[in-house]
Image (cartoon, rainbow, N blue to C red; front, side, top):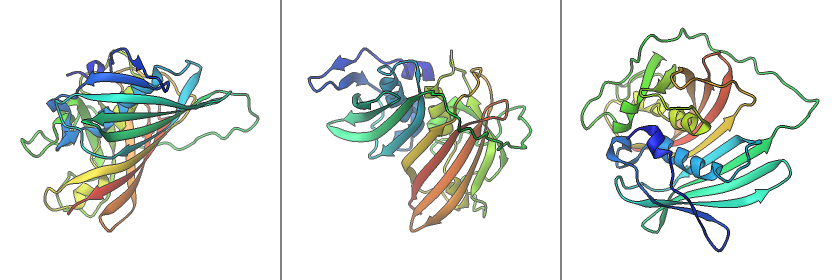
Length: 271
């Protein structure tokens, strides 16, 4: 299933408490990540549900997601959206994926209007990686490579393939959709940022479970429009890892070498 099909949601039902409910949703097996659905697409679906109730003058500033439990592939679930507060400048919404009565993924989104301000700090962080000519990262190995990776082109510049016993704990490279969406939106950006494996997997010598526990995204505005087939640059580094948990930070640039997002994750590893 193409990413645009997953992000096309049915009409919501308005509940008595003013929450909105999207019913009869499913994520197919080709978007699987181990025993659950790929986290990037589940978070993007929540964002797409929330965004339907936000005025166009308010852009996404921050998106926080907790991965609470697995989403069963090819089984129906629902997304519930609740408005938390809508102020003059900033709006807060929550969204949850609920399957079989249990919360699987919970997100909170913050939107804000652009306002006149005398405070301005330019971002000058750039990368020096040459743009790739083709994808070159992880081959599709049955029962080893996550199925969702077939939807992305990843081109590694520095870092190692998972489960190869490397000493490095970072990834530098580029990413894009293997089948470009019709129009590239923030929902697509959320999806693609999560395409890279956790930085710590390359340090393991054999396959072992790992999963993101919490994920924080911050979006830089204003940013330029991008084409659906553009490469995005990605650099992720491990800040610290111990006791079966790792903390990573990543920066994402567009094709013009301008920062468009900052990502932070807490990852649980079971080695």
